[in-house]
Image (spheres, rainbow, N blue to C red):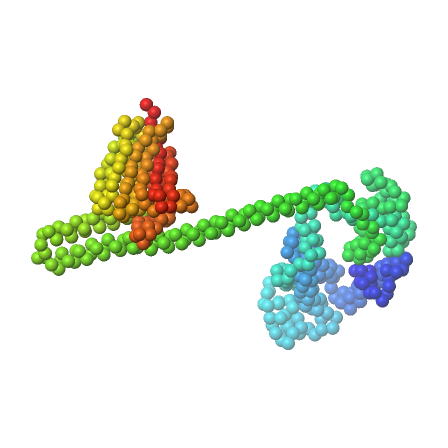
Length: 536
């Protein structure tokens, strides 16, 4: 404790002195004398009133104040020097108040009222009944309050202060000591060498020449490195010398003194390779982080796009629901308010109401179907089917829509086609959806739709072609995503919900087929899908 303090006093210039062993001996003799003197004074004035066991227990409580800092330093990396000092100060202050000062009352140093009534007659501050805690003996009482104050200050200050770099490094060495292998421990040696005479001279200054020579001789006899150079000390010997000095002047001072004579060696090829390997790992990790960051950015942009598409979807669905509802309500009110209306007009209004109701039903069914498919709850009722019959049924169901829009329909369906394994209603939904899209995007003046069924080597191919506005290459994949729509410039707002093709894609894929589009802007579009047929 004393020597590191003296080495820090520059005006003493102890670092320039060749032999410091005499100063060390003087410090030790003086320390022993002071300890014995303090013990005698305490026993002379106080000790005659207490048995030796009681005095030893008082000392034990004082020494116990180092326990939280020692245990915390071994097991807790977050502990700090400020926290340890705060805990020690708090613990010793409470120890002095609850044990040391009360013992002085028997020597007449303090009045008896200090114990019986507390300082300033405050009962809660009685040293043997602090804050009203009674029912336990004096030693246990003091131990409880000192440990409480010590640990609270230690933990509290450590939590609100940041450890220095040295404190962090020491914490890693102490807390993770059992996680380190022998190879890791070798890295703690000094990275260099020192002149053996310089090292021996340094040890002689603090330990005495004879003791230093014997210590170095013992190290050589027990060393397993096989290096016995008379002029240079290897890193292991330098580390051993540091440990010897630590016992004399403390660890921090010993390290400083050893550093003054150390000659660091240039890194060897193994060390350079290790550094390069660590650098390579850091670079690889950095590339992984960059890749992960890019992926996160891409996912974030996609989430933003999906959020925007959902907003558009809600707006579109609201519009699509509102339009037929408005027509149904208006026509129903006319029929209700004017019962005398002629039969021809009444029939016309009722047909419009039925048509708009069917439109509402299709819209709601489409949304519900997509929700079920997207959640993985789609059920397929598979059976042997003739795809040509399904296509003709879909055309018949869409015939009114085709005629209302003055669309010319051309079909090329092979009558003799292999059977497929599929769900009739779902496949018909796909074909009707493609026909509906073709009608919506065909040319309003001379609209034309071609529907074909072709037999290929392993599957059947259905194609629906229109002469509409076409789709650019970017939209070839996006159009099958949910909420995606291609705007028809001639019609302004896009019709539908943007779910039809997404549903069709899911259904086709569940039948182990695939769906795609072939199109160029201004040249119409051809939607195709394939379904594998059953071998005969």
